[in-house]
Image 1 (cartoon, rainbow, N blue to C red):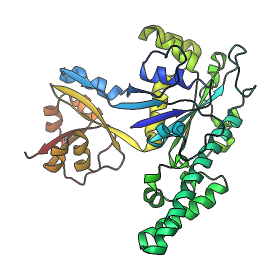
Image 2: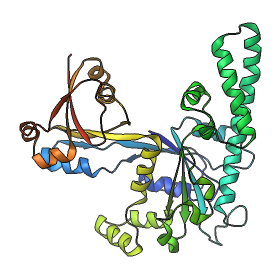
Image 3: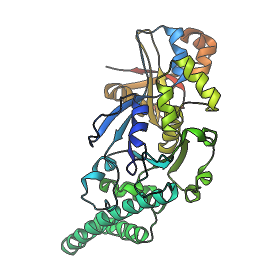
Image 4: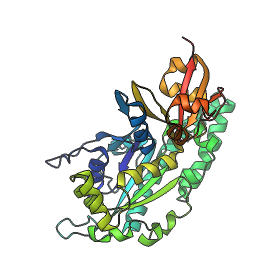
Length: 357
């Protein structure tokens, strides 16, 4: 899973990227695209460790990309600023809701709704540019060959242009089948969007509120969109503390859980991901897959050879395994089941794949 941060200059997105990836903030103000890996916190996996005492414990990961900040006028199909966003599975848009006279907002005032509109307008313009260019080429191709698939694509792109001209994001305008048909164009407004409002340190009491509290009513009920409020400044301070001190500091501020956990949970929900576990003396590991993935497809997440040689999956819910105390005890209680290739793996399943080869 790869998520690209985006936002206007001085929004705090690089600070947030630093927190998510555990990477030091860059020095010298050099503008470049940065990549980092975040471990996905998973208490279920952590509770498997005392049971199996594995040599290795491996959490699922998310790749976060921190490109250069957005600029007004960036909405062009070939703008290199947008390239890191096009390859991502989802976008994390950071909106500034903190005020600091020593670090003024580029537009002179703090207004998350205005900034959201500005960034989304650039995305709409960039997608419109891509769609119109492709339509021009398609029209020439259709005149020569007239293939049905080209005509179908022309229909979808024509509808996309109409919606974009009305400032409707493609994630809200096209069906899933239509979005799949034009996926190769990496439309920005088709990508799932996670909006993070970055608050002042003295506004931590607002972290649990919805988008309406920040003038972002337009986000309510939007398809393919999630919302999180956080304070990157506070999270950066907390990241430097010991686990016990961090927990105490959060409790004092009324922050129930780290921003990393809330952002990753929102990202999983937004993209329709779940995690299953594999356990053993050598390794306990979490794997991320799309919700609805059958057992054979989940086996492919572990290794393509296991998917090819799939025979059966031994499955037990993580809490039942924990209650039983061992795989052998879970088998005796008939909690460890044999499932075929069409079984849909559930979030938190502990799975052992039987395979040939």
